[in-house]
Image 1 (spheres, rainbow, N blue to C red):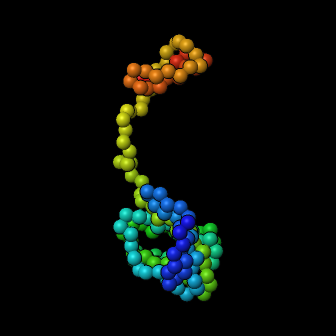
Image 2: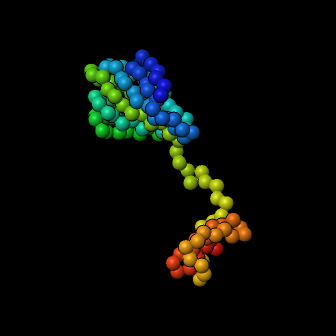
Image 3: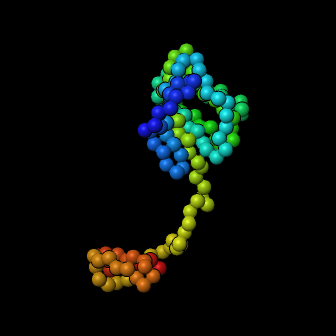
Length: 141
């Protein structure tokens, strides 16, 4: 876990993967972060304790209290602000899932039922797996 400091408080990175990052923000009272946007990432803020205000250029000004969350879309200018008490916020920055983010090697479809040996695994010439069941063999068509 990596910890960094800002004028608004401290950030503790708890998890990171290719599609995003999870951090805990320990925010000082009466502070705000920079007015900024993310080109491809969503920012999901969940208030753990205290209160935090999320402002956006879309006219939103949302005050989050414990267990409340708010997500800022990519390209939206925003900042977070604290009020007169410290706050702890979980921030998850992630990229949007798209249905085009899949590479299929074979299409799905119906399974073929073949009467034969039971309770065994087989591999076909095409590398497909088949499964022996109490009633016969099920294989990909």
